[in-house]
Image (tube, rainbow, N blue to C red; front, side, top):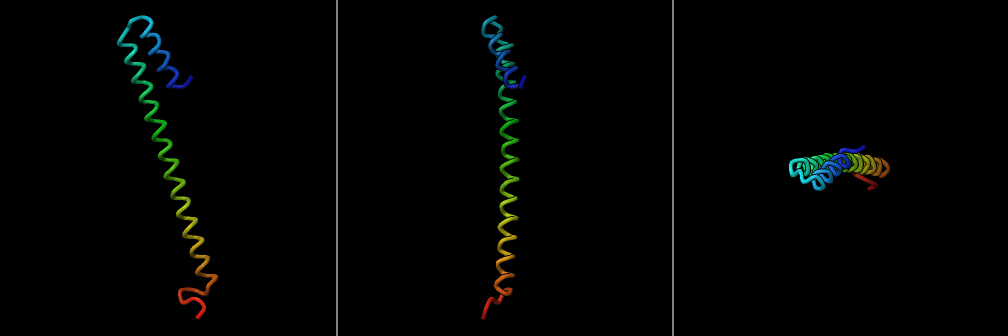
Length: 74
């Protein structure tokens, strides 16, 4: 069971039982897991951006090599 689902269950229990503390705890648990998921997505996005930059640099380097270096085909 995911942390988000556990938080949802705590929140629901708190709402049904009238336990505001348990309800708030469940909401906090859900927010914490959402933040963790978002951070994970940010890391994956950054990794993909870095990968794309490396690929672009490699492609540019290969194009320069194919053209005969910095001076090109004069």
